[in-house]
Image 1 (tube, rainbow, N blue to C red):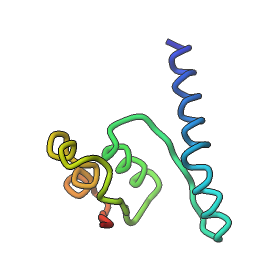
Image 2 (cartoon, rainbow, N blue to C red; image 1 turned 180 degrees about the horizontal axis):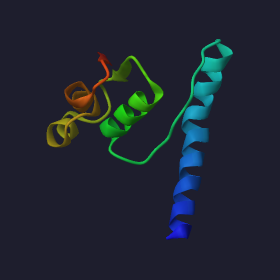
Image 3 (cartoon, helix red, strand yellow; image 1 turned 45 degrees about the horizontal axis):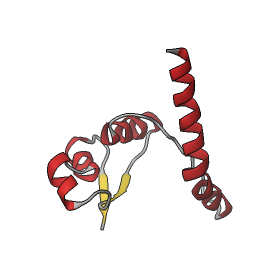
Image 4 (cartoon, rainbow, N blue to C red; image 1 turned 60 degrees about the vertical axis):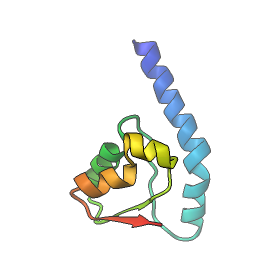
Length: 93
């Protein structure tokens, strides 16, 4: 169990470095204050937890993420956020 947890943490660190590292660096270079977070979990619920715990006043999300069929079968993260978020959500086309 401990080894599995360790592998998951390593996976999260690699994802943060590879996926979010360049964007975070560009934002900071442009003078913006930002923090990046990578977590396992249901996407909409996780975004809401992060927004609430950080005191976010707004969530912005792109409406494109999966195929039309995937959205029909499983729903979309943007749609879920709009329905369940306690923080205002802006969906960007």
